[in-house]
Each structure stands twice: as structure tokens, then as C-alpha cells.
Length: 134
Image (cartoon, rainbow, N blue to C red):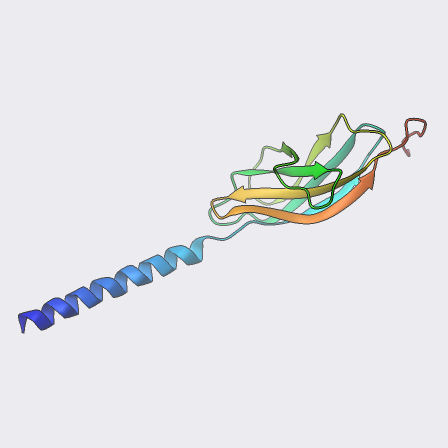
């Protein structure tokens, strides 16, 4: 009888721990975001950004954009962070770009679940002789 109670108690503890772990796993959620179109670009500068529609759980700890002259940039390429929290739009200023060059940009956000990227957008900086559109 004592052994049956012990086994029953042990099974109950295992069930509670398993349920508790599953609850914790379900609360971890990656942020959701999109990359906005690059604007105001010149031969050496541009404005890039993104929109975060869900901050994730736990909420992200870093957000910004990454960019490169090759497709699918990551935070291991050039990245610029933007301070802020919660959902909504954000922007960063890209500087020191090379004239007449195509760049690929993705917004990103990081939480304990990892790094999440928005869609990729591309743009080409102006030639040194071109003036920005007004």
C-alpha cells in the first residue's frame, strides 16, 4: 500500500512538472516584423526601418536593420540598432554608402527565442552626378 502511494505521488509530480514545462514552452514567442521600403536615398545615405506587429514573449531586447551588398543580410553583416520597445514603426539612417550600388536590407528583432528577420527590400544608391528626388 505504501509503495502504491509512493508511485502515485511520483507520477503526480512528474505530470505537474511536464505540464509546467509545456506551459513555459508555449509562452516563448518570436517577435513579428516587416521591413519597410527604403526612402530618401542619395549617393551615400538612406533611411531604412521596419514595423514590429508583435513584440514577442519575452519582448525583444534589440531591434534595427541589417544591410549588405549581397542578398539576405544578417546581423553578422552591417547592422544598425534603434532604441525603443513595443510595437510600431522605427527608422535608422544608413550612412557612408557607396554611390551607384545595390543594397539589401532587412529589419530584425532579437529576444530569447533568437533573431527574427523581416522581408528583404533592396535599393540602389544614386550615382554621384544624380540629385535626390524632391
